[in-house]
Image (tube, rainbow, N blue to C red):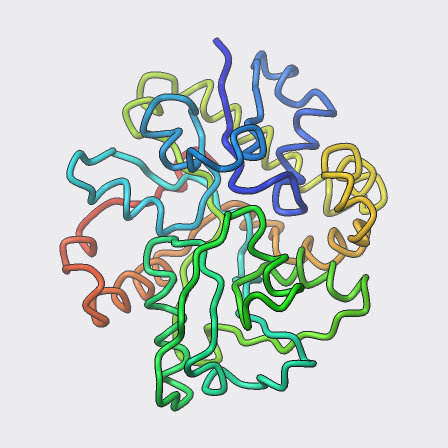
Length: 300
């Protein structure tokens, strides 16, 4: 039995625990065969959540929104988040400092490069409105793996990044950014990224699934104590462009405080509930989602 993990992006620092578990044999030590699926293989034509839905993957890396989407589509998938990679939100909306767009309200009428993720456009527009914007954004939808580049080339005015990845790339390349975090505008964003699995598969293969999560957790904890080695593992998996443009050791140093030690992988009910309630209050979901079991720490 080969278990497949679908990454949400080309390999990067958020995946380091998974990459270490693979490279250092943590999966093999637990009697597991694990394959890591890189979205570059199909140029993101099939999202990680869809791969989980279609049975092409056993685990999917995605934002918490994907769990909500899978459980509430016309043909529901009984998916559950089982591991939070980061204990705090390290994402942000960014502009180039050279653009002069130094606050969300300044983005009124400007171009935002969107991943077309569930709620994304509404969340970003809510940030603008919280800052007093008087006009909506213009949303464009480039190829997902090229979205960051649309900001760098001036084809978009803003986009959503992980500060511990694209943010480090920008710093490495001397590109100054304005960064706007959701929390600063009273948006209680959920966990991102998380590892998602299908509940029925967890029941059928609980020992194997728990062993996968244990190996991954061991990988993240190892990275926290071995920065240079983790950077070397990362170097072996990232794209050639990322090898050249990103200070990989810095991405590891910037990220490891957010893996957690005693709470590594765990999700807090209050944070999940705050995000779900915000979605309901914004009219983006019905209160049905407040009753759904969308996450579990049981495999940790």
